Structure formats: C-alpha cells, structure tokens
Amino acid sequence: MKRVSLVLLATASTLLGSAGLPARADNGGLSSVTVVVSQLVSTKSAVKVYFYNVRDKFLQHGGYAFMRVVKPGGQNQIQLPIDLPDGEWAVAITQDINNNDKLDKNFLGIPTEPYAFSNNIRPTVSAPDFNQCKFMVKGSGKVVSIVLKK
Image 1 (cartoon, one colour):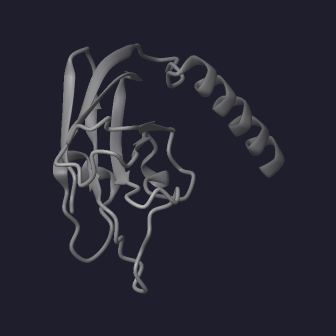
Image 2 (cartoon, helix red, strand yellow):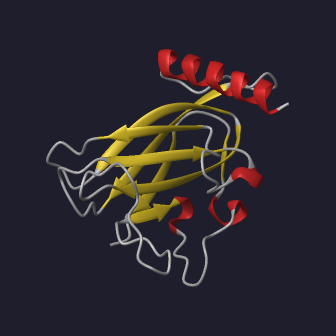
C-alpha cells in the first residue's frame, strides 16, 4: 500500500509542478485566492507558503497539498495569487532567513525563524490545529491576509 501511495504522490507532485496549479477537485470548481503576507523580516529571504486541505495532515511532515516559494524581491510584503479547488484550506508560512532550506528551531523545537498561519493564529504553547487556521474557498476574489510572526 505504501508503494502505491508513493507512486500516486510522485505522480501528483509531477502534475502539480508542471501545471503550477493544485489539482482540481472532482466535486467542485476552482476559485482564485490571493495570499498576502506582510511584515516580512527580510526583503531578500525566501518565503515558503504551504497549502493544506486535509485536516489530519495539517502541519505533518509532507502533509501539505502543495507548496510555493516566493522571493520578496526587496519588498516587505508578498502577494501570491493562486487558484484553489473549492473547500476548506489552511496555510502555514515560514521565512528562511539564513537560506538553509529548512525551518530552524531551538532545543525545545520552537521555530527560531519567522512563521505564520492563516487566520493569524498565534500559538503560545503548541502548534495550532486545522480548524483554527482553516478558511473557506468558494468563489473567486478571496484575499487571505497573514502577518508574519517575528
């Protein structure tokens, strides 16, 4: 079963990468959404935007539906327009300040690089859950504004 899942995941990743869009849901349409991330700590370091649409996979290693990397290009804010299948989504964002392609953490496992979640959830003791961060996508024109946590 794991082998079949890995093959499906690899195939889906290839299709997503070539199309630049998430897979279309069979039971719904696509809606345009713009993710706006403000108060970037660095105007040069990459911002990683992780999109989740499965509650049980939220914040799990490799559990995201897809991810985009955006370079701020000297700006302290980014805008990422994207088409998403209608339904519930949640977003997690990190900024890789030292460009080592990972989210650095301290000895307690707390991120030492900037991060944020949709709905501007600010966890204090543990990571948030999908329900806290989710937003509904149905119909074009939705803007999801997120302030990066320093």
